[in-house]
Length: 291
Image (tube, rainbow, N blue to C red; front, side, top):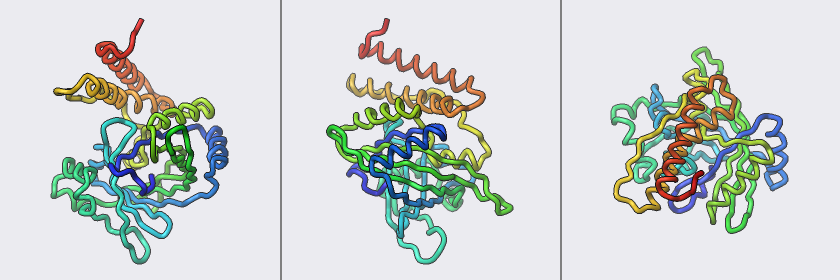
């Protein structure tokens, strides 16, 4: 979200979406929390012609924040609710987007993940593939043992077509991010928003919205189980690995169904598979009793 990350540069947040009528109520709620002022955030996302970075869950972004440009890389981390993030403020003179420079992230784990996805010869093919134009309201919210930030985003992601026109998708979402303190408070606040505004988890990033739009996809395909290696770990680490791996299958499929995908048979099937995997893992580890 913003450039004030914790020392590990790991972003821990939950993203929620709601239908337009509920989103209007949610906007009033965030304003009451202190999110009165709106900030315009214009961004360009960088990728290869075949979107290798987006397919790997990596976002390379140039975003104007006030008078400054921030270059950002976001990459997958250990679980669906956290992501690696590295932000660098760059200088820009004149109009237009700055030139994206991957070397600025070379010493950070998020930047190094790009080298695992792209061959050196592919770096020259990186270019702006889609853009976003977002108005954001932010509010700092103190909880019991935590400081959170609410970021309410409303705007569009768009692709510039060959004829100069645009293909556009609307964006409405609330991000609840842990700034400091107990991470459980993120879940507590998310549950409150879900109950009060009939919101639902949104695992789709703006980069993924852009990828779908650029490739004329109405929604993401069903997510199947991802392989995981447990290795020689403690029981607690094994439990967390199983939980995280199962949620990486459960949440995206549940989000697509909640968003109203018309043909959800595959998503529902994979959601059920993920829930069964989670249940089996917990049962084996003796973390919860099942009838």
